[in-house]
Image: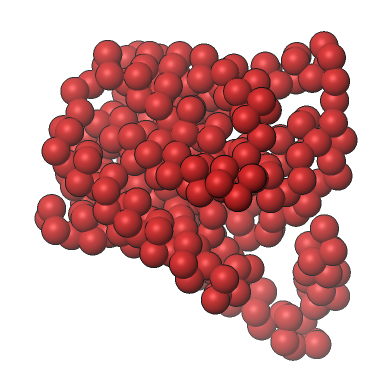
Length: 291
């Protein structure tokens, strides 16, 4: 099982390197269901994996001048407070409840991936409005990260564009720095709740970093939209499995079935003119592509 865990950690890292985010959402299920850790140990270990992997990515972006450190520190400092608090709060939350919450985050992440990355209009805020919005969003995002171990990159990037007025490349690089800060703060909060198996944690972290470096080398050679959507559907399947494990097997079966039927139905409607939803799907696809 150790060899399988390390091999899958490399695969998670490769997906992270290819997508530039999102791959870490699979770290908790990997540790919980393959490595056999309980929920809190799996989440705490995943925070180490996500933190180190994001830090490595942030360094790479910083060398290319795509990290705005002032914005990262402003946003990250408030997020770290929320992340540490989230880690502390887990002493009052059961492991089963944490996994259900994590599955919900997986569903939200998958939907964001299926919709595609949209480029919001950069509108930099200044003064008290900027500080208030940054503090509120940072605390909320950090709380989610510290509690369930999800990095939240799909929320950090648009927040940096909208609040900080960053261009998309700089927002992506800066988000990795923020996610690393969140993850390490959340880990610090968890360390007073659980004891981490450092040998396994470091092994999985090293494997994920190697995978991320491999994935980043091939990122320019694959279609990112196709890959992102395929990954989104896979994350939905994984979320269904977790909900089936934690709530009721019927919930998992229904989720997996819908995840298989919906894309097949969408594919058919996109290629069959007689489908009553053909026009709606076409307009939705066009709108997503122009966003």
